Length: 588
Image (cartoon, rainbow, N blue to C red; front, side, top):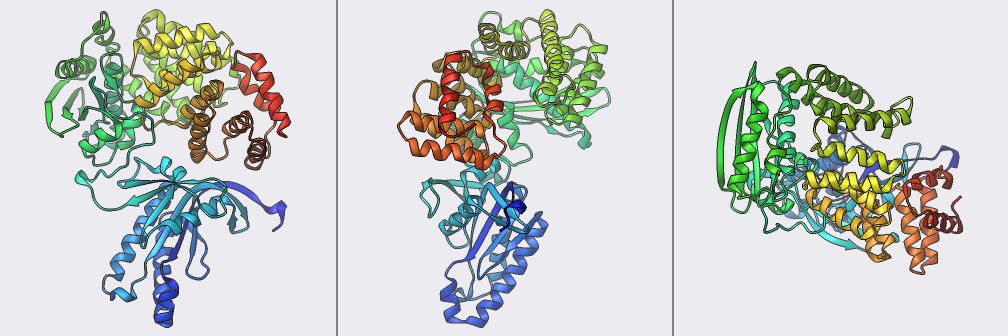
């Protein structure tokens, strides 16, 4: 291989081979080769239709690459189903069973060929699959769970040949489940239901007959989640977790087990002209039985009052005890004009897409809300989030200016409504970047007090605790955030791992970081922390190896650039020691 031609990329890798191939060849060489050729034609066609490419097919094996892990797993299931259908007419001794392994990992690319541990892990997973079975890695599982109508069986960590560390393995279960919602429990800590009432609000279905109205039904759902999250007596699962079930048939009882909730709310929205019809039903997650169901027909301008009514019925049905002031904090009308509400929901939909173009369009929508209803906090808050996104993702010509504008808009939202939890959370982020740690914690604690079930606000507070010298409080906040959003983003793990490192809980830290690296193998932030954890336990060789892994995954890594990420850490002496350790391990 010529080093100058080699590049790296993250890819979904599928490896397949025939179980018992030597036995089949010994029994009937010509028949086996004909069956192999026919099977490969089927597989190649399905791989192409799932946007993949066949890399190589030596002997009885096949190696394919996909840009999407969802496409790779969907393709594997389609392959097994089609091959099973085709072989049904053959006698048992002539049937050909393919084992399939799938991994999401970093690969080296040389021309049309791919190499590296990413490929090797997929090959080892293939050997663990039973005949006509599919095994996937933990990194693949984390990206595909909740996105396909499949079940997954956790086989635990498996030592595999020529791979330094054990690999988390999941077996794909293709048998149908009640309601079609076959899913495995997400990887999270403490996901069993509590004695206190808890609820998952599924995305309300758009029944308007126009796919372009999807943003409106999503906006209604988000507002209900936001209202419920303000109640301290009710645990509410975050939108990021419940929306992963969108578009899938769901078995309420299984969902209750997966998310650890006692109740599920589902419904639909039909909008026509100036009218809106919302149906909602509250279900007992243990039995799947209805607690209550209702249909509402209202003028569009009454949408917030309608949401308040749904919230009140949930509170009554679950016997949620409201603390002093909670009723006033939840049940209030924030927008009066239907066109302002429409612009606000469009803005939320665009903001959640996290692209430069969508962010600009979201800002225009929230600007329309500001124009129509300047006395509402929602226009100011929405615009503040677009400015913060422009700062975080480098979409602004002046990052400091974007951050300053975000803070100013959040303060304006609080002038109009001091109980706006998201505005306090945004200010907490601003104070943290400005090195005002005590103010960051105070703002974060206020945001959590106002919305006890808001997962990201709890995680942001955890970050403030972690970098401000309060790691024990950070761990507690992150565990709470992970409970509220069982299908949580990787950055939750990064913060939790840092807090565990600061507490000298190195075994827990390593476990957390390993899970994060299964999702994002190229994360230098996780790898440098893992190297430091190894060093703290006297594992000098492993620490140096992990430091080299940083450079292998990110050849452009420079300590000076990484140092800038540590600017928010309050303990500068700790930062100095940490950077010194990384230099000792060979990072510059």
